[in-house]
Image (cartoon, rainbow, N blue to C red):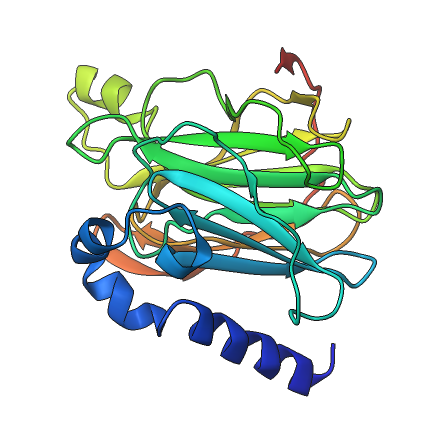
Length: 256
């Protein structure tokens, strides 16, 4: 993509929500002063380009995640579509922006996290649209496990398979029961090879990662996702890590 287009989109997003850095540092104040689910009230905005070149935005505001599309590089947008029509306790961390991916058939996938309690235990939800973002099916948990999940990332493989990764704390309770220390969280992932209709059982890539850092996902080849994350080495040293890619797709068994 030409550099001037990327720069133009970044400038556009900053102008839309009044320099997001300032808003993130005063998130609670923003929630009080701007209580509409509109783009002007958004503290988190995520852009992506679809295969057809259309620009999509997903944002969080007033407990709702919304999506819009532009066919002219952001000069105009269609009417917003609510991913979750009823307000939810969205994860308000500075890295907790909604994630969006659009496939070649115009199906839209959105992942976001909510807080389940006051201890920052989260739950990752996944929603999809099969009508080019006009409406969304009900959001569903990306995993049936009730332990905390946050810092999700999604990406589409070259064959259209949807890959999701997140930080997951399901292994901390068993470790505590064994009187074993458990640093951080686990790096978890799942696949959908049928356009989000089903999601695979969760697999754990590695334990003891940093529990509060965003993820980055790319592909080294078909079925070979690469995840950049912050790991915990030797129990105390935290630094970025990239596991060697491998074909990670497995049977898809959990229905939506």
